[in-house]
Amino acid sequence: MYKLMTAGPTQVSESVRKALSTHRGNPDIDIEFLEYYKNLCLKFSKFFNTDNEFYILGGEGILGLESACASLTEKGDRVLVIDNGVFGKGFKDFVELYGGEAVLYTVDDRNPVDIDKLNEYLKKDSNFKYATVVHCDTPSGILNDVSAISKLLSSYNIMSVVDSVSSSFGVPLSMGEIDILCLGSQKALSAPTGLTIIGVSDRAKKSMENRKTKIASFYANILAFKDYYENRWFPYTMPIYDIYALGQAMDNVINDENVFERHSKMANITRETVKAMGLKLYTESGYSDTVTVFEVPECTTCDDIVSIMKDKHNILISGSFDYLLGKVLRIGHMGENANEKDVYETLLALYETLLEVGFDISKSKEEIFYFM
Image (tube, rainbow, N blue to C red; front, side):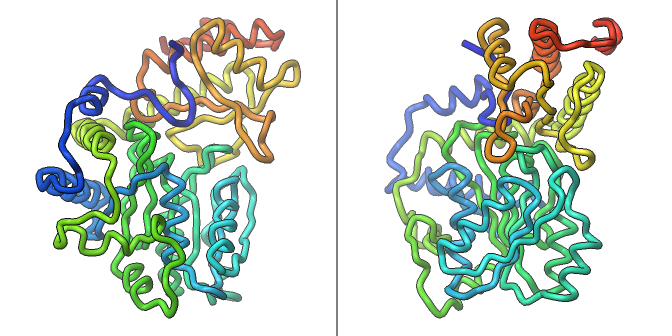
């Protein structure tokens, strides 16, 4: 079995696998599970330093993005889509799907969103119900300052929807003035794929409750979870095994006092080693501590490097997609992947793979891997 060093899903710990395989009850009628779910949601609130309520939804992280747009958007609502990457622009589809008018604010994808320039834009046009922005856009590896962005948006009375699926738990973040925070189970949290975690502010809830029209979805309707605890009833059968595994993964993060320092160290080592090999990072600034993205050398192809890494070294890294398809490679160092052994083995395998495809590395192996 190959080592999973992609930008998610990530490897999971033995404790999470054990939690996943332990026999459980019926989530529709089991009060013990209801209490477990509620307490787990409270852990997320505490972790993100907020009193806002969190919910766990039965679906991969994209469900959170769609649910936010489905629950907030009414026909004709103007929504600012902050676009400096694949997923940033992707919010446009969800906004338009539910009848909104998506207004793209497109900027350079090799650098984070410039707060001052965004402010200048909003001075001219701030007539938006809410805005969407991605924390870490994994196809390019860019990291945006969503805390500052959401604070700026709030000053214009614009709600914020933040996709932090691939950065939270590996990069520090407080919910602050974010109105809807979308998280996923399979990235830096290192739980099994298939769950969305979503935090919702009181302002966002009131906006949903005061709609003139019904939310045009059931499964993507955040209000479906309203008063679930008081009513002792979930809107649909919850994936109980996955949620217990999620709880164990969350406990692992909470109990890791150096979780952010570990991610920062592994990210810095990966970036510096990749550059020492003579490769070029895709982004110019705003590097995420959860993924490193670098350009494919001219002497080879993305597919060749991925195949050699997998077939000869039993390590899976990934290319990208959309407009970056075939142009960049990505190494994930998030969650359970962010450890010295796995990162070092991946970088050594990359070094040997580059030599095999004929890439000219000017520095010696000793110079590149001085830290080992």
